[in-house]
Image (cartoon, rainbow, N blue to C red):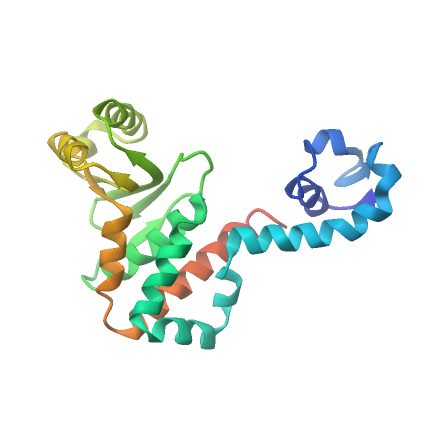
Amino acid sequence: MMCTSVTSMRMLTICGCHGTYSVLKAVGHLIYELRPPYTDRAEDLCAWIPRRIKRHIEERLGIVPLLQNVATRVSLADNRAQFLDLIRQQIDKTTANFEIFGFAVIKVHLEKFACKIYRDTRTAAHDKGVDLSTNFGVVYQIKKLRIHTKSEADRLYAELKLNFDSERLQDGNVILVIDDISKDVKKYLIDMRVQSISKEDLLKVASNFDDPEDRQKVLRIVYEEFRREYSSTIK
C-alpha cells in the first residue's frame, strides 16, 4: 500500500497509529510505503482511515467547518443567548479553540475603538500560547491555562521575561488571556504590571456585542483563522 503524499502520512498519524516512522517508510521524495504489520491489514485500513479522520475532525473542530456558510453564521449570531452558548461551548473544546475564539472576540471588541490586533503565531500545543500584536504597542498572549497560586504566577512571569523585552513588561504592555485565574493571583500579577483576562472576561465581552453583525464577524474570523491554521499544515 503506497501513500504518495505528506498529507497521507499525516492522516495515518492523526488516526492514532503509534508514531509515523513505525507505520511508514520513505521510498522516494514525498512517497511512503506502509510497514508491516500494517500491510497485512491494508484493506481494512483503507476503509477505517476515512471514518477515523471524519470522527477526528468532528471531535476537534465541532461546528467550525459549518461557519464557512454565511447563512449559518447569520442564524447562529441572530440570537444573543444562542451565540453566547456557542462561544462558551466551543472555547472549552481544545487549546486551539480557546486561542482562536478568544482572538476573534478581542479583535471585534478592539475594532470598536479603531484598534487593530494581529495573530502572529499559529496555535500551539501544551499551553505554549499564541502571541497577538497590536497597533497601539500592547501584546496579548493567549494561553489555555489555569493559575491559582503565586508559584504558578512566578513561573509564568519567568516565561514572559524570556518571550518579551523587559521594557515592554515594565510598561505594562503585556496582557495575558488565560482560562482561569484567582483574584489574589490576578492582583499579584497586576503588581508586576501584567494584566490578565480570563475566560469569563472574554464571555462578558462577547455578551456586550449588541449588534448581530458583530457576532457574525466573530464567527467569520473564527472560520478564517481555522482555515489559515490548517491550510498552512496540510498541503
